[in-house]
Length: 304
Image (cartoon, rainbow, N blue to C red; front, side, top):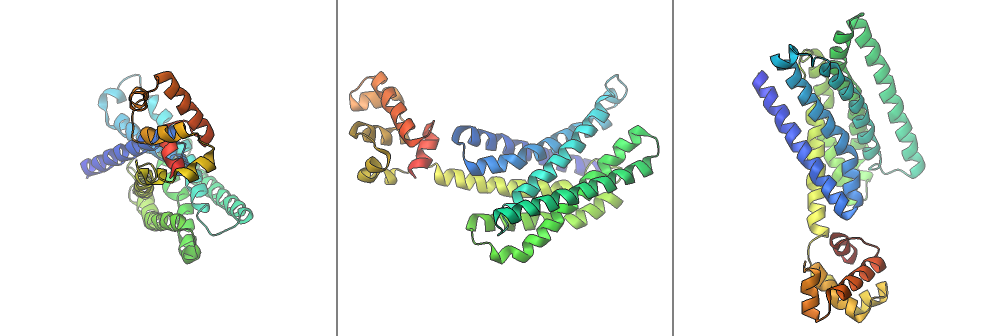
């Protein structure tokens, strides 16, 4: 069973870390709002899984356990506890934006979520201290066992609430993400019970599965969004009159844009239009300035 848990945790960590890196690259290149939202919760969740996995290796590695590196164990544990709280708040903030509420109501929902997490955090902390007595190392171990499943019950409550208002969500994108959230966190109550009562002495927790599933579903949606909105589709460029009027582009800039979208280098564009590379660079800078973008991917999305 231990080998199975190790394998699952390794797969979770690898997938989430890869999704985080890809999302970070997309955001760095495009400054896309969806990539930013996805990255907002992927960062703490992938960090939790990565550090948790390293903590598990530290606990089972006899070389580390017998060396002077034992201080890494409580350090990893404290980092995980802190990141757990950040993960829960990040997910809560994200899902509240999916609810069919106005800005004022969303702020109230966020305050309620923070209150619920804080209450669960205090209750869990008191429970951990009571069970651990004065043993600090045991307190850290118990905190790892208790914090994630118990505090994640807030996300289960949000999933139940979202289930009742699901039909009222008009935006198709938000409705799809709400469906992902419900699928991922509706089983959280069961996962919390199993983690709290059965997996007390295990670093592996089923609670990770809810976070991993939602993160991967959101990442798949981001991938679809990226390939849909940043494909080299030049059909939108055929309406040159509209582009010229909308962005105040010159005739030469209208000639440069399709070549940029096709992926030609500045040198190739210069050879194609029989102008110098410096002239091409000047046109490209003017195009980026007029369309308020900073690279070709953003240009493609802006034109689309």
